[in-house]
Length: 124
Image 1 (cartoon, rainbow, N blue to C red):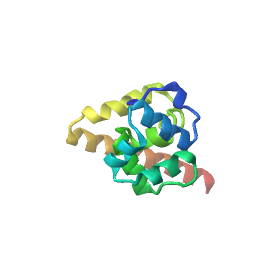
Image 2 (cartoon, rainbow, N blue to C red; image 1 turned 45 degrees about the vertical axis):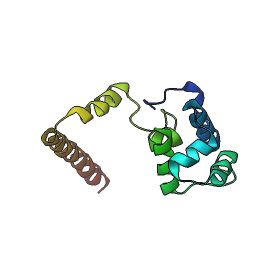
Image 3 (spheres, helix red, strand yellow; image 1 turned 120 degrees about the horizontal axis):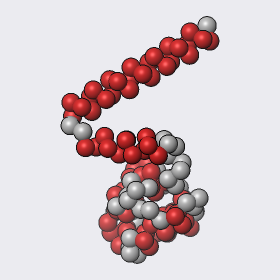
Image 4 (cartoon, one colour; image 1 turned 180 degrees about the horizontal axis):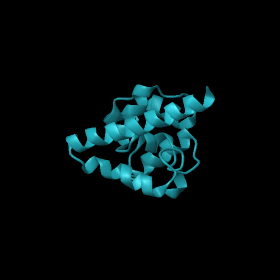
């Protein structure tokens, strides 16, 4: 959760995480409602755990809070590679130009295909 590094968010249920992120951003329920177009009553229901948002609502909430969907739903140990070196490398991909990204995709696809082929041969 790079844009919101608040250890207290770890292991929180969605309603608690939503409240914590909203408060961390200094927003009231009404101001979050105004930013997202989600009725304030519905935001109250999500925060109370009485309703579960759809994917589209989760996207609106993440945008309104200025966080990624992952930050809204997961703590940092639940998503992404476990090795710190790979995490840093994945973040660096955003600095590559489009041709380099395509090359990287081809290399990764090739390695994954090779891995799957080996698994298939072993299981046959």
